[in-house]
Length: 412
Ligand code: ASP
Image 1 (cartoon, rainbow, N blue to C red):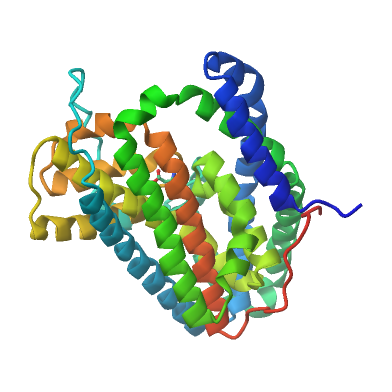
Image 2: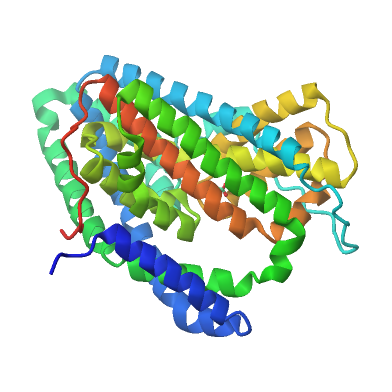
């Protein structure tokens, strides 16, 4: 019998999970106690592998680029794509929020409490923080931006050493390969994990939670679909001459993991597998572009922040001027860069956007209840953008393997 594709199995897991969640709506505890742990097990396995995988593959990737010039060229192109697509996402969010008139007719619940103004680090602090004073601590804390900085610096050191650096290179190469094999093994559990992760979410978020904020949910989901369809499809077709349908098919397993885990970081190992194994991006490029993207490129988050800012303005009856909306584009782009790739981080960074344009922070409490539902869509877009960028960079460097076929399983 023909082996079923992994993405088909994941899709079945997702559909079965949604169905189970609907059936268990009256008793979410059952979902939490009996089903969720299997999802948590999968998540723990993935989280376990992220730090060694990113550290080792980025060091090997840096060494593989061979010279600082190539590193600068690829880095420049990557960051330009990330910034432009993110700014576009916020603009799209604002347009949709205006069209859907999100929040109109919404009655403020009486129990909206003042949201805690979260501590927002300044831009200077954020930049200074990129260099870890203690790389071991950065790894222990899972601070991705610091790990990336350390890996790039150590990788450059290994290149500078020449022959003497060979043992260190071999060590990290071997560590990267081992982490890679482990990821392949873990991925085969993905269909069950997707089921276990989605069931409790559906069980806990009945129609009561969702209905009042339906316009926000619809705007965010349509925005995410449009952004993927317009921006990624067209840039892939134009800059990489790459078939968008093949792209979406190849990236689907990673999207399903992003949708159910709401974490770009947790999806990174799977995204690397799909982008390399299904879409033909060489490791030297994906191991640079993807970890960076999982940390700083968040188009879905930026789009969501644009929509939510307008929603909150509407609910409080405040008109936003064009200048204020332009400010939202700028701050939401910056805020999304500062957003960590973990569940709910975008909601916290929304504070920054609201504060800059003088919107009431209490508004956060309104969207907090449905944040998980919005997070699923935005995280999916976040990781899709990273993979699209990796393909475009690989094509621009003439390093894309165009004959690469979509894999049916990822067994090691
Ligand atoms: N959960 C998102 C991510 O990991 C970040 C966010 O909350 O917007 O990409």
